[in-house]
Image (cartoon, rainbow, N blue to C red; front, side, top):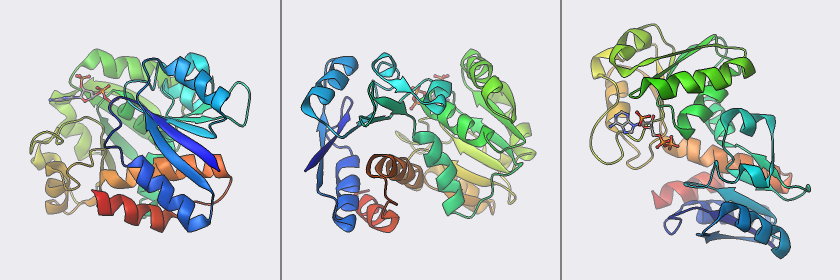
Length: 269
Ligand code: ATR
């Protein structure tokens, strides 16, 4: 039996164990998925090697801290964060499947990302992953953040690595950027704690596809405003699902049973 694990703090209420185990069950993979709250991410990777753990997911607050313990993929290096460790290599490979999570969430919704003008709100780990994902095929990605210097640093890091033209700006003029955009991603935590949105409802329009990385609640104020404006909406559970699907496929070498994993995930949300 293979053992997969998630490290982070807190991980008690993580939806990854049921989502991955639904995947193992549906495909007949003999595996379990467990969670740990280690004191050190690098020690946890060393322990996972010794214990023969087959794969590790990494979440807050360890996604950057784990980098020195792995050989990062080009994608993970670009984003500056690892969420999936593959022990088939030595040293283990550190990937970032949040990037695939964003791309595949849009693809699943039938939204083409080819040559789009995109706006990403937020410049933390989720903002970096979303910018890397959209930057692969968009014409442009504008990153708007409350703290402008963080958006500027993100753009400086990712601009050389992606074909799209990247720009950074404050949240105050995000309306003008959204007016010209085809795709919008909320990569801030706004909407999680309270019924709030990071962008004014009046800025949204019918030619927009909107992904909210927040998945609690599933229907955020941003997505309600977007639907009311006639925009296409993609909730955060799709991004959560597809980062897990990408990890499952990397680890097992099989196509993930997307429907089974999705049903289990949504039943718990
Ligand atoms: P993650 O790794 O999940 O992206 P993070 O690094 O803590 O988490 O980043 C959170 C993002 O949400 C940041 O872009 C943050 O803006 P700042 O860089 O200015 O802190 C954004 N954010 C959090 N609360 C916000 C709020 N009330 N209004 C606007 N942006 C907010």
